[in-house]
Amino acid sequence: MTALALFNDLLSSLSRVAPLSVELWDLKGRLTSVESGRPEENVSKEAEELSRRVILEGAFRSVRLGAGRTLFGAPVRTGGEVAGALLSHHRESQGDDEGRDAALNENMEVFLTHLADFMKEHLAAQQEAQKMAEELTRSFEDLYLYASISTQVKTLHFSNLMLRDMIRDLLDTMRSDLAFALFPDREEYYAVNFTRDFAQRVEDPEAFLRILVEKIPAGATSGGETYFIVNDSRGEPTYGPLHPDPYRFLAVRIGHGRNFYGWLGLFSFNLKEIFRRGELKLLSSIAEQLAIVISNADLYRDLENFVINVVKSLVSTIEAKDTYTKGHSDRVYHYSLVLAEALDLDDEQMDNLSWAAILHDIGKIGIPESILNKPARLSDQEYDIVKQHPGQGTRILKPLKQLLRSLPGILHHHERYDGAGYPDGLKGEDIPLMARIISVADTFDAITSVRAYRSDKTPEEALAIMEEVAGTQLDPRLVKVFKDLYDQGAIEQIIA
Image (cartoon, rainbow, N blue to C red; front, top):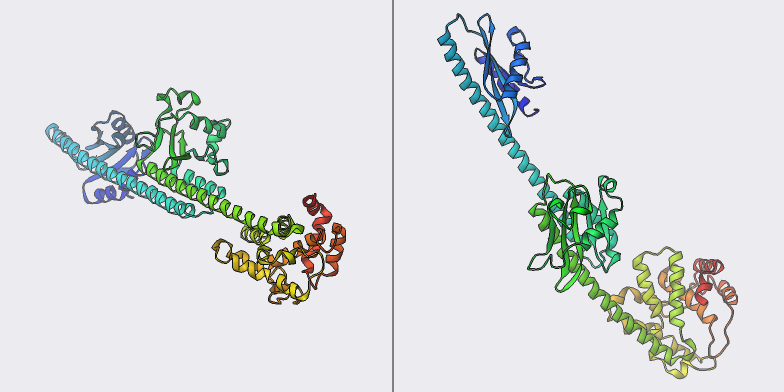
């Protein structure tokens, strides 16, 4: 009845310009204010009784109050139901003329009915405008959600965390009890979010969701359709027994071409609403975006695996030339990553370091085997040739755009902390961090491995030598961290 109270000003104004006192009532009492100094407009028992009778009977009624006064009442309807009553005190009736009273009664019925119809039409228009505003708000929310999600899923770095955030936003925007993305063969992409009410009604939400999806008919999305919908579980023999409360369920297929990946969907116990066409289109658009990003991620993964296999072949080629360094690149890779994790490097830094570490000696592919496998110390001329391998490795890998950020680690892994290294004589913190990490790992493995010109040393002996050259050859902080890791058993596990 709040909406009816909006007519207070209109009815008060009417009472001031006409010999009528027009009031609005509902079953709880009078809604309009009373103008001061007009005792005939005070709340009376007769007015309260007449308003209740008009509302309950839904018809025009009148009652004589005595002293030449008559009280008239007409029903006010909103949404097809009687919501209130318009009451009018006729304040100038004199005498006891039955004909005059009948005419007055008829005229008042027409007047109050027209006024009630006007109020009804106004309220209907107001409700329609409110409904349109709500629809526009929901459409805006849908568009905002789609814009936000489409921006996220267009990246190859789309993650499970991003998917969980997307499902949470989907649940809030769609006003459902459950939102999900379920991938039968890709558990890493699984995401589900549900309301507290859903958790209270369903004992095991995730198990319940999997049953819902498992029962989707095999041909549900055939014939050009890409979705499956249950508008009321009570009419579905397969879905009705799954829960005692009636519910709605919508699942949209996530697929690209002939490839099927999973389902994106909503679940709701609220049967007063339906799944809107806009919601279906939004889910279908998001499902298409997800399918594309998964397909692209698969292609990227295939390409990455291809590159990894090529790298392994290159490393195997180097190790085939240098019989004394078999497994060296792999061990340096592992030592470098253990050290990097202790330094809390981010994902991008770890990725760049991993490529640099496994490929740090790729330039040796151009060095003669007679030098690589020489059973004695190298001459100055031979050592100058060996010193070319960081630059040669950088030139070999430079055409590969995916490895550009890893090249500084390859080029500078033989720089010394005191500036006496090669190829550029960089010093201290000017040496890229990934190169300093590889240098520590490379030194440790070189000392603990058999070489053509000497036998191997124990890890403890290697660490002692590394502490002696900390601050000259190696970064002292990294040497300390590496030794701590060894003392904790992290390095020893890799050796074993």
